[in-house]
Image (cartoon, rainbow, N blue to C red; front, top):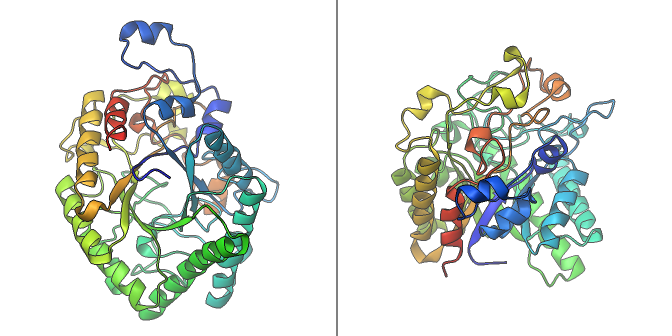
Length: 419
């Protein structure tokens, strides 16, 4: 695996393609390229811009009793492995992102999978170990072992609620309209300090089970390829969160691991200076490799309703609502997106001791095609929310609404080529 990670989360790609999404590489050939370029494979295009790692999320059982998918790209084992195979065939590595949930897991919600409901903490610990081991065995059968395994997703407020919940109280079922239901929407600033010691012990036990499964799997197969473990929190500008979480994780017997993943969205997670200060501090405090495991920035505030083909009441609309965008010091334009990515990458590259190891852009290919929203009728029934559905992220992709590459990719390639 390359020492510098230029990663992309492409979890919705297969669904986007099936619903009509096409991709074009404008490269540096100007307007003629835009008119003449043939549609290409999104993975191949992104690889030309330096992508060397694909991040793919995995949900335990993202289907209702009738077998209907919960949508949002699928997130099931078959979809995940199909995308991983495509990446491997291109010589691209991949990160397996366990959510340990049947649908979105983030600081605002960490639902226990349907099959694990009613289990106590010890039983959940064993369930995590068994599920992690089962998935890795399947990966081996398909000859697509991941390079990195993320044990849980955005664990700032814990996982497998309520036994692994680090928040003061369970959030309301519906999230504020300004916040994305598929990402880090909870306020994590003070939450960890409020959690009882037992919750931290449970979180450490749950996470340890995933890490131990990865290690035991490696030992059983005598793997030549190392599988690295990552622990991932949101709110990358919040140093108090990271110090508190990891200090208490280790104090409660947390197993060692290789990577700390951070989410950083400039409209939710503070300034770049805050991200820099946090990364520099935790690099020295914990000595782990650091990856900004989720990052994105808008290239426009122009609506994409015509592309989604949904009625107004069916659309969630973009996550970057005007009132939160107003505080971001970059315009939501193609050039603003490119400038933001340049500055983020520079922050990562300047982390002490060379511990800033790269980034993963979140859903750069989530075009606003019909039928590929953050949820659907089956998943909304499961999470007991009324909707609406729709795509909240299309204005933050690295392709415009018609699938053409954006200037930020040139910046990404420039830094990917540096050594």
